[in-house]
Image 1 (cartoon, rainbow, N blue to C red):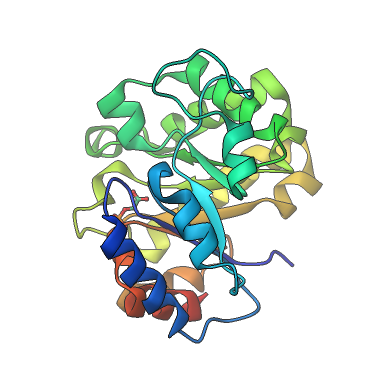
Image 2: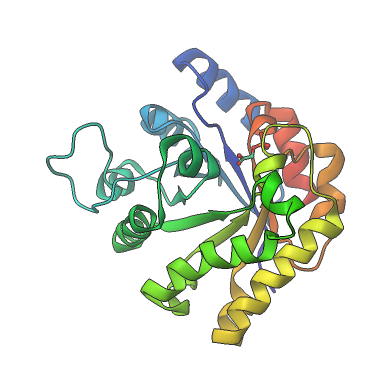
Length: 249
Ligand code: PGA
């Protein structure tokens, strides 16, 4: 059985004061012990959040890491060694906002993936198609290609210590959610693609759905057989809403 995971991606939101408030709000939630729960603040707030949540079981993650694992001369970046030192356990790789708005491509993403794992952190590899790609019937091909880039470089066993998040780009921050059936179809295809390489890895890896998940749609999404939890953007900025989503997993 795969242990469910719900991770909150705070994106580029927050001030020290609002982060303190959110931490306080998270303390008020009754969170299920059967779910891995994570929050991913902007790196700037990592220490504040790790310190603030230390009396909880909530895991702290990061939204990005540098292409090299060790600290060094790389202006503006944060190394996975530094994230690990600060108490992070998970790091997003390949979020569509970084692929599309920053222009990160497979070679860069693969370096980040390796750097994250090199420091014992767990990469959360994000994949997903745009609306045009879905309309053109290319969803499975696009997602398959994004996944293949990592498998081709590191082998399928690299996914044993990773999480995969399927996030259709058209559903992110738009209020449009993939239906549970649409999401399940892609999740099943991802698992089938992994199973072709290694059935055990395919059965063990957690596949999260992301894209306008809210308390109101989480139960249905999380009840699908290949959806093992969620990557939550907007709704993770509200502690009550995030708590309710965690309880749905
Ligand atoms: P959203 O974002 O929940 O605000 O749609 C999800 C994500 O980008 O991880």
